[in-house]
Image (cartoon, rainbow, N blue to C red):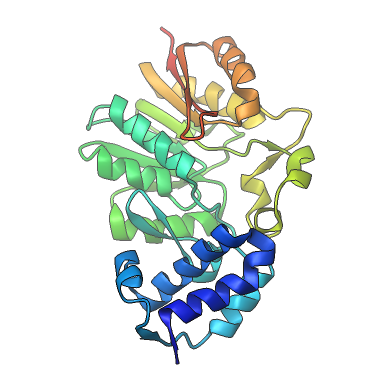
Length: 281
């Protein structure tokens, strides 16, 4: 049996050629925290406590093949929630946490919200916890994603309502009430940018949730914006997580689709990654 420190060092040294020293250690610590069921403070204060991870060799093998650590441990933290993730579901990112916080800071606690392309359910569940007197629907085309999202909701927000639907179709027929908010983090990375990305993303995360054809990179945004005009009440808001390269094009598209009061917001890296638009009267 090895100590917590020794296991961190063993994992980190195995994957350092892939990720570099700092990220490799961060990944190794994530494994130890999850498998040891301990907090980061416990790891820092008691690094020499013994820990047995029975499938450590398998874990190292999978990490060394670029499999994302979140899929290896089946968890990712998002907005203080330990969410289940797995192949077929996009791994939640910190930028999306910022989008959730922005929405919660602008909307009433009673807001009726739809999350389009919910994936793990991270946006819908986090917003339901924050907008605690409203109602949240979560839609996805993937039955795999919806199954995982439902399990996450059962733990943190069991009254989120899930709907199977296609973001590129007219999904307004699926809802019988007007909404205050529609939010989406749709596919937005042009396929030509795949060459710039690492295998832990391109080889494992669902391409359906990541990539769009180069000839129309805004097609999901445009379709969602068009359908959302039918669903939003007058003055309701549409929020998107966006690709930083398309911020200007997004503003033009939303104006053309009948939205106003458009705000582009930067993320913690000072990149334009979020946008909000109001349904015009």
